[in-house]
Length: 129
Image (cartoon, rainbow, N blue to C red; front, side, top):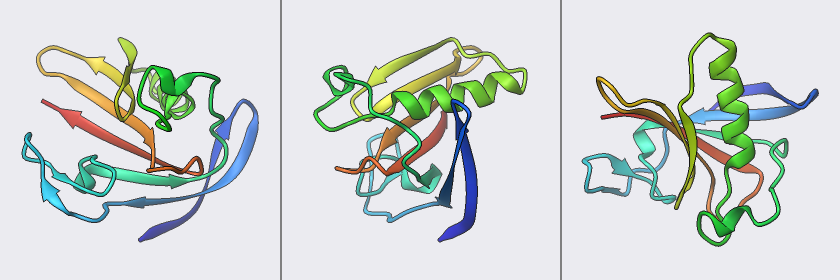
């Protein structure tokens, strides 16, 4: 499922990364999204394999034990802002970090988090409701 190697730059460092879309579809969640093994809408996510995103001390105290996503959210936010779009805020969530882009006329956000028990596989997914 890999789209091939790509490069993610963070803090001036480039690391090889593999990105894939989609995932295993296990069940339909309460919002009608199909959820994969990470309880994230699997038909909307991108998996990024890299060690470029460091874990901040105490980061999982705001989410759940072993759940991270601050560094990926920072990277995605910088990419969004570099394209002239604005970000309202980054919110810790049980799955990692939520990048709130706008709330009107609809809520648009990007979820960022690590895959279960991994710190070298990350998931990003966009939701508009």
